[in-house]
Image 1: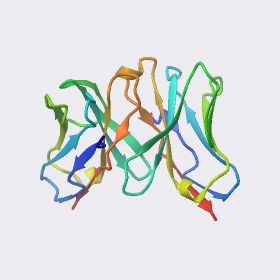
Image 2: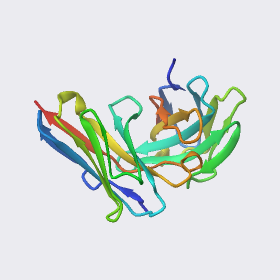
Image 3: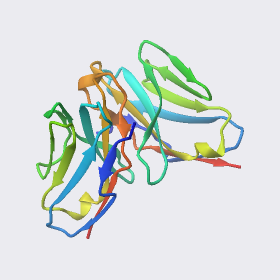
Length: 114
Length: 112
């Protein structure tokens, strides 16, 4: 049972435009969410996170939005740059983050078209 | 600070063999987690160790095991390899609870 779902395996966006990556979850106990970015032949690197007490967190070009009632979060990248081309993983954790494993989605491959 | 180091980077084994993967966490990090990445499945959690104790375990068969040493280094062992075990195995470390994970580059295991 996939508790964290990224329904779009791939996404192509023109350079300079906004990239929106989506993630849905089913476990209502999740209350901490993260986005990781992965380049080929490298491990995932942390991008941005959000706690369930917030509905938005921003870090430079990256903004994560959380809609708890819909169990949905999204990552916005604006403006998109060629270096943003990578696989993006959404991850979620329970109330006791330190003792709970991270549950990852299947990833979305983002391609930025110059 | 050096990042999470995983060895070897690539490994080719045949069915029925066993394999041991190694992970050195970031200095000062006491928690080490292992994940399996396969195409279409994302990252599947294997287990997490903290101060040499297994704290969490994923839904993998008993052929998958791990351990952590007093210096926080960790090893993962897979016995009686199957074709379906071919995957990228990622190790991640963190300093303490409520900290984000830092990943290594992974070990790409191919089972023939």
